Length: 232
Ligand code: APR
Image: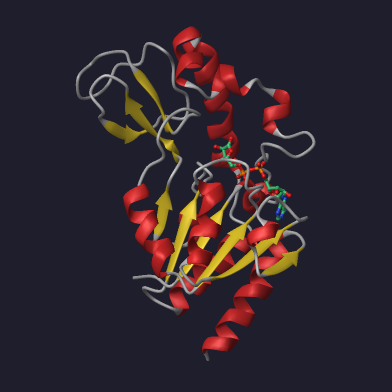
C-alpha cells in the first residue's frame, strides 16, 4: 500500500485558472454555498445548481494541468505503488497530468449521477434539470459531486492509507473542510511526517512538521525533486 499520501485542494489548480473557494475572490465569496452546494439547495433550485456546475465544467474543460500536477504524476511514475493522491477538487487535472492512483473523495465534475437509481455516467458539458437518467429514465440527474452535508467517497480506503503513510503532504488546501481537515492529524498520530505546501500558512500548519510556502507550480516540483533525491 502507498506510503506517500498526498491530499490536494483547490490551490493546486489555482494556477491552471480554476478558482479556489475561500481565498479573496474565491467561489464561496461569489456564490452562496447553501444554494449551490447542498442537497437542500438542489431541491430548491435545480436550474441554478446546474448552471453553477456547468460553468465549473466549462472552466475545467478549458484548463490544463500545471507543473504541480505534472510533478505529482512524475512522483507516482518514479515510485510505482507508493503514491496515492486524495483529491478534494472535482476537476480532472491530476488524471490528465498522468496520475493514476487518485481517490476522488468529493466526486468528479465530469461525471453525472442519478439521484433516483445511483447510476453514474460521463457528464455532458451542459446538464439540465430535466435530463433523463440513461439507466432509469427519471429526470433526477445531478453532478456527481459531494455536497455539504453528504458523506465523501472512499473513506474506507482513505483511513488505512493514512494509518500506513510514511509521508503525508497537504497541497493547496485551507484545511477548513472535514473530514479532510483531520487527515494530517490521523497520519501524524500513526507516525507520518506531515508536510504542508501552500501559498501561505493555513489551518493545516499546526499539524505540519515542515512547510513549503509558495505557489504550487514552483513548490511542488521542488518538493518532488527532494523526495526523489532522498529515495535515490
Ligand atoms: N499554490 C498553493 N496554494 C495555493 C495557491 C497556489 N497557487 N493558491 C491558493 N492556494 C491555497 C490557499 O492559500 C488556500 O489555503 O489553497 C487553499 C485553498 O483553500 P480553499 O479555497 O478553502 O480550498 P480547499 O481547501 O480545497 O477546499 C476544500 O471545500 O467547498 C469545498 O468541496 C470544496 O473541495 C473543496 C473543499
